[in-house]
Amino acid sequence: MKIFLDTANIDEIREAHSWGILDGVTTNPSLVAKEGKDFLDVVRQICAIVPGPVSAEVVATTTDDMIREGREIMRKIGAPNVVIKIPMIREGLRAIRTLSSEGIRVNTTLIFSSPQALLAAKAGAAYVSPFIGRLDDISHVGMDIVRDIRVIFDNYEFKCGILAASIRNPLHVVDAARAGADVATMPFGVLEAIIRHPLTDVGLKKFLKDWEKLPQQMRAGS
Ligand code: G3P
Image (cartoon, rainbow, N blue to C red):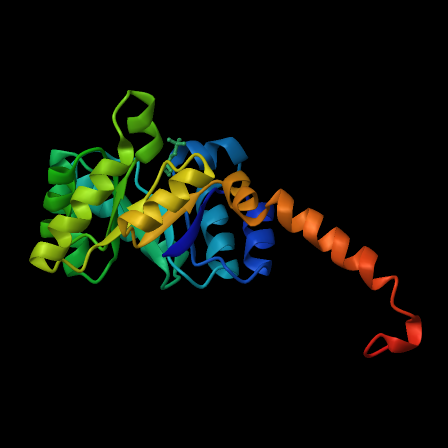
């Protein structure tokens, strides 16, 4: 499963990229607004740091405007790793079809059911983004739709990637991997949390303490 960061914060992206495990980045209008920086500049900067897919979302809501905005983002950013995020609304379907047929990869966002994912895949989306945490928030098991989408895509050999989004905690990451999601996109805090384990820290402390007992001249390389 690929690991994406769900953020528009450049410091977080730089840091996670330096760890050598970052496969891509997703942004959305809320995340960009939180940073208070120019949208295109932020996406350009992210694309320069991360070679993997970087999702940038349109804010238009009519088909023609979404197509226009998607093309414009691609042209203005000028990086091959940009993926255009289109919301899963009726007007979005033809926008997905048109942009995909022009070779622009589309990530269909705000997916809350498996038939929505089926339609997005049929329209030619490269990714569908089911929002796990937001479904959990309203007492639906969000991960169930990832499981359903996996079965549907496998049944019909859709090449569309399942990008588990709205990931809120380490258990979501484990469950997304178990459900066969192709990607999990997560906030920096969740990525940090899945690195750590208290027993790793205790174990390392003990190894280093015990090592001190070995005379200096017996330590390899010293
Ligand atoms: O990028 C979309 C999604 O990951 C948002 O997550 O936590 O705002 O539901 P959240």
